[in-house]
Amino acid sequence: MSAAKPPIRVLVVDDYPDSAESVAGWLALDGFETQVAHDGESALIQASLWHPQVCIVDLGMPKLDGFGLAQRLREESWADGTVLIAHTGYTASEVRHRALQAGFDHYLTKPAEPQEFLRVIENRARA
Image 1 (cartoon, rainbow, N blue to C red):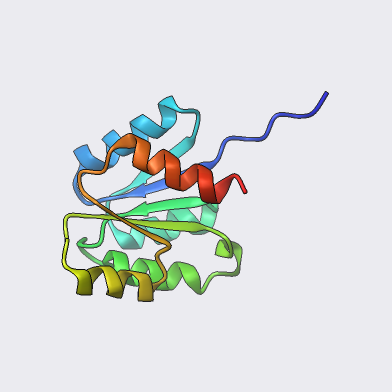
Image 2: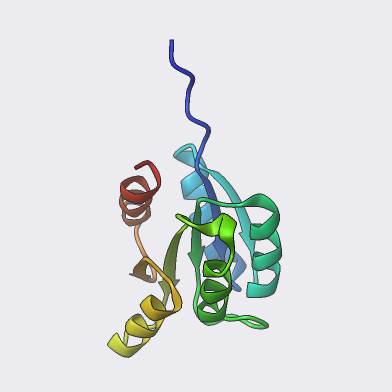
């Protein structure tokens, strides 16, 4: 009998509480372990303590924006292999390019459907 895999840890970071809680709620219903942060600075602290395998991050936030958070996470040795997903209302191609340069693996435009998150997470984090 093989041991069940522990749930994938997902940190959802968004300064709009309803958005963060909605995404975290969808993922929790699908068996993911979730935590929420509402700014980049607190997300960085939570991530360093919890070591999420996936971070879903809004780009426009106070204190430390999503671009800066991604760059800081990519500097952490524990975050090697962590999947970073930008979840933003910004649609301009130059913003997408900047996000990918900052270290994001994926870029989803708000409001992304739950299936989009699941597809990205399951393709990357279960590998």
